[in-house]
Structures are given as C-alpha cells and as structure tokens.
Amino acid sequence: MTQTKEKVSFRANPGAQEDFVKSQEPFPAFIGGFGAGKTIAGCLKAFGYTLSNPGAHGCITEPVSGMLADPLMETWRELFGEYEGNLWVERGRLGPNWQIEFPALGSHILLRSAETPGRLIGFKVAWAWMDEAAETEGGSQESAFLNLVPRRRQAGFGHWLGITTTSAGRDWLWRDWEDDPKKGHVLFKATSYDNPYLDKASLAETVSEYGEGTPLYRQRIMAEFAQLEGLVLPTFDPQTMIKPWPDTVFLSSIAGVDFAPQSPTTVVESSIDLSGRRWLREWLYERECDNETLFKACRAAMRAGVTLFVGDPSGKEQIRDMNRERIPTIAAPSNKILDRVKAWTKPIGENRLMVDKSSQFLIREVTGLTWAKKRGRLLETNEFSPLTPDHAVDAGAYALMQQNKMIIDWKPPEIGNW
Ligand SMILES: Nc1ncnc2c1ncn2[C@@H]1O[C@H](COP(=O)(O)OP(=O)(O)OP(=O)(O)O)[C@@H](O)[C@H]1O
Ligand SMILES: [Mg+2]
Image 1 (tube, protein in one colour):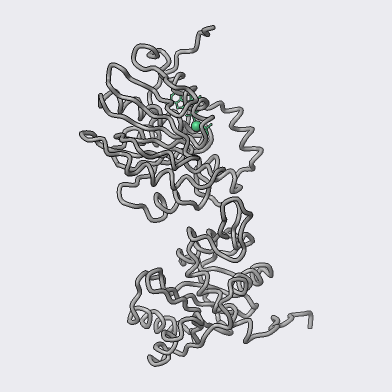
Image 2 (image 1 turned 135 degrees about the vertical axis):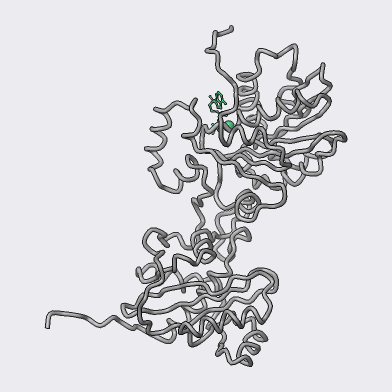
C-alpha cells in the first residue's frame, strides 16, 4: 500500500549537517544529539558521492545488522525511494552480502554490522560511513573503524571514512576528533535543536525527562562528549569547585610531581588557606619533558611560595636529580591507585577542595578521569581508563596526601561571640 507523503525537501540542513555532507576531509565526524539528522546526513553524503563518482563502491555500517533495515534502509527510502528500481536496488536483504546496487553506475554499497569487525575485511571500496559509531553494546566500534581504514583502496577515487553518532562520553571518538584530533579528522556538531524538522513537542518532552543541564542532556541533546558513568571523581562539582586563584595567605604550599618519559610530566601545587581549604593549580603539563623544563617550572613554583615537592615514589632518580638542583623533593607516601583517589575524594567530600580556574589540563583531567571498563565486565576500580589521562590528577594526589600526613586534623579557629 502506498501512502501519499508530504513532499519534503531533502537539502542538507545548513550548518553541521551540510558541512559534514560537503566535507572533503578523509575522516569527517558528525556528532549530533538525538534526531539531529545524523542518519540523513550519512545517506545524503553516500548518495551524493556515488552519483558524482560512478564506479565507486562504499560500505555503510550500523552497530548491529538489525539497524541496517531500520533506521538505515528506512531512512534511505524516505530520501531516495522514488529512484528505487531504476537508479538503485536493494540486494541480499538481511544476508551476509546485503547491498545497495546502482546497476547503471557500476557502483555498490555494502551494508555491514560493526559488531562483527572481523568480517570487515576482504573488500575494496572508495569510502565508508559508520552510523552510530559510539554505540558500544558489543564492545567499542574502534576496531571496526580500524578495519575499515585500509578497506578504502579502490583506485581512482578520493577516499573517505565518515562517522555519524550521538556522543558516548570520553571514548575513542572524543580522543581522536576532539581532544587531540588526528590528521584529516574533522568534527561537526549539531544539537537536537538544530534540526528544524524534528518534532518540537517530543523534543521538549525528552528534554524535560533528561533534565536540562544534566550530563545526559549535554550528551544526548547538546552533542557534548559528556561523561555519564565511571567517573573517578564524580563528586567534584565544576560549578562550585573551580575558582580564580585567591589572593590570600597560605598555611602550607607544596607541589606534587608526576614524572613520565613520553606522556606529560606534571607539577601541581596544593596550598592550604586559613579556613583549611586546599587550592590546587598546575605549574607544568609537558609531554616529553626534559629536566631543564621541569626544574624551571619548580623554581617558578618556589618563587610563588611552594616549599616542598613530593614526587611519584617510583621516580627515585628524578627525585635525586631535583634535590641536586636544590629543589627540595621527597617521595610521596604512596602511589597506590586507591590512595591517590582518596587523596582527592576526602577533601572534595568535605567541601574543602578548589581548583584554579586557569589550570585547564588539571580541570580536564579531574572532570574527565574514568575507571577502566573491560568488555563484559563491570567497571574496574583498580585501573584508570587508558583513554583518560591522570598525570595532573596524580601530581595533585601526591601533594594532597603529603599535606594530610603533615597537618593532621587541623581545624579552622572558631570565631564565636566574645
Ligand atoms: N536535511 C533534512 N531535510 C529534511 N528532513 C530532515 C533533514 N535532516 C533530518 N530530517 C528529518 O529529521 C528527522 C531525524 O533525522 P535523522 O533520522 O537523520 O536523525 P538522527 O540524528 O539520525 O536521529 P536518531 O538520533 O534517532 O538516530 C527525520 O524525520 C528526518 O527526515
Ligand atoms: Mg540515526
């Protein structure tokens, strides 16, 4: 039975959707809120590319094969149904060789599930598009992505591998597209509000269920890489615990140091003010850091009042080097993971921890650090996720634990009615 459908204009929405469709970069990603127009964007890009590159083959993935029927083929028909049978045909539906064929153009598009990345081998295409690439039910889709990269070697065509998805927090997409973008990786973002065709009433209902401003809202509606679960320091509240560095007298100023050959070496100060609050700020966050750079940062911290450095206890040589340079340094009481975490959670829980507003690396780590997650298991609490850096958090932890050791049970003076 055919229904008369309203005639919809299928031009890409101006902004992120259109920019993604038109992008010539090899690895474009369109991160969008629910209903932001992600699947439409991918279909438009795939169709447009095929029409202007006869003979070029492609591959589309959805997280699981059921989703190739709906939303993928549903959306494809919504857009290009009127050309079915003459321009394109669907073949092998639900089977291992499921594809969209363009007989007159000599092109085809393979339809595959990303959940079985081992099957994403043995074919040559010019392009690929992964829909809902952050979806993680069967494990991360990063291996599907990595398998698709070398599949794009059909000669004579410009190659691309595009991503459309809702964000799932600090994952591999965040790492390679937003935090430290790799070559050719470009990011386009659209919120659910950016799609004028999305039903406003149902969007409003979703927003009210999620709660405006909550991590879920920021992730699923506003297309931010907001982290929902597994945070190591979930009680750290950026709204109230990030402040400009105060102009005040401190009772104790010491700094923690985390040494690393390749990943950043970090120096983080912790200073206790007269009401017992710990103020933290970063002095150094430097990849492949040489000794001179480290010493320079420590001397600057000393001029600002830091009297003692507390290093990662496994960095014995570096601690010796620092003392030789007249930078007073001792080994931290512990580098066990739970001691490092407690050094933070205790003052946070007591509402006695503040982070300097301009310490951007430290802020990013404190708000983003998550526990490792192993496939098929619950969250680990003996390991941080390799995707979220802990260098500045660790340096801060060494300073905090040393201060706890030095000032036991210090209480602010009571100012009563005299
Ligand atoms: N450029 C466009 N022109 C017309 N309609 C559009 C356009 N982009 C999106 N839409 C409409 O908006 C709705 C949502 O689009 P789409 O399914 O692509 O969003 P999505 O981000 O993939 O959604 P989901 O989060 O459910 O996967 C669809 O009904 C679609 O037809
Ligand atoms: Mg979709």
